[in-house]
Amino acid sequence: MNYCRQNYYGDSSLSTMDEVSVKAYFGRIPTFIGGSSKLDIPRVMFQGNPYKATLQYGSDGKFTFISASPTNNLPKNQSSVETILSNSILTLPLIRYMDNGKVKKL
Image (cartoon, rainbow, N blue to C red; front, side, top):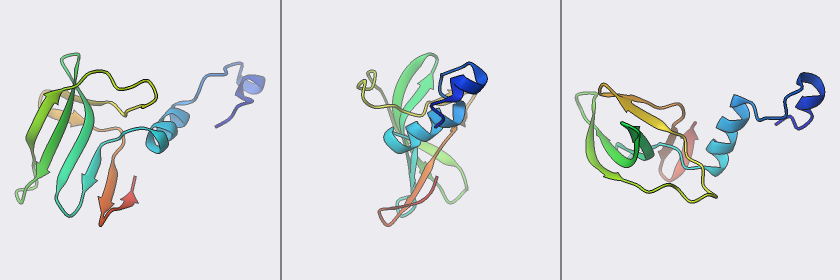
């Protein structure tokens, strides 16, 4: 993060990359767990409402919903990468891939 950004650009707000980095490090992001083929999404926005969802990756190469439930706002100390569901398409700006309990990729 560039804390002296305002000296050069006149803007002291976080860049988009700063926000993504903070969410990836501190926040809750969608996580695909290799061994179980499940995708856990802590926050999916659908028609303006937040949901927590779990999807299963099938042998047909498609994801299906296992569960989805309305969720209250996250605690103020937890950020979350927002996933959006629209027209049966999930937009995942960031995902963590885990295998054997270890993060393999972001």
